[in-house]
Image (cartoon, rainbow, N blue to C red; front, side, top):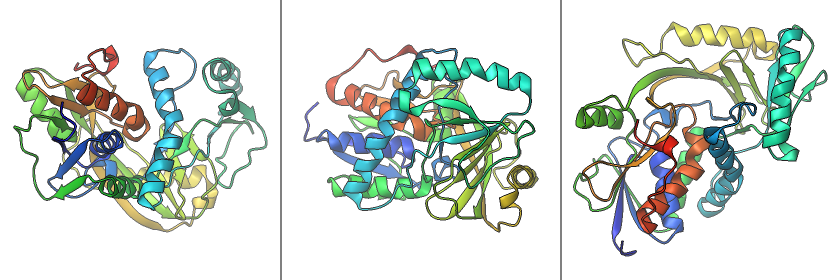
Length: 345
């Protein structure tokens, strides 16, 4: 492909903007189209947990995610440097209460897996004396701590990413759909894109999963994330704490309902310091989940030069650095040896 031609990117969520940023870094001319606004979809949520998969039972998907999480430090540092704006990125770690002795014993395999598969300075261990502002209640007086988990402020990160793209000569057009006949296209259009693929290909590529979260007024910017029974509590750099999220496979609407109140109630009990923290905002959105449960990065069948980047679900931000770099290799270098796990289901 000629480097002076324009590459169109459809979608200004994390997948589209990360691909556009990676393309500009390689000298490509990029134009991003977004029919609504930056982060209008699930990328504009609140939680921002860049949490690794469990390090035991190692497999290619876990290895790819680890590569991306490790790349995130330099990825977001450069975005901040070019844009002059904060992304809210920080490797603050994660704290999990240990409910019983059986779990504590079972976690030894996970700790050993971290020793084998994670960098030595980003391991996992049990502690009875966690160094944190937000300490979840633990029946055993033990907590599992890991140094690999990071956090990102989704909305701040998208604003910084968009500004970095523009600073490097890219263009972002809001309120307009991308042209469908561009010679070089990246389709990062979330749930709408998965629906289009289901129809176009005559099989289920993915679906939407509803999520709800909330933001609380409580400052603990250096405290580790808290994770317990599917719930994330993420302290952010701006003096807020995000609580989320639900995972609703069946839903009647995309609005906020009682389920986020139930989750907030659990969070306040788990972390008593949040008991009186005011709610700043509640959020609901539909996240794109591929049937494979892994992000999709694949050529669009029968559309030469068109690339699908979708299905980030809960790990879209975490996988963005490696997925974006692979997308650039496809678009600019003609790479065809993509891992099977990112193929269309």
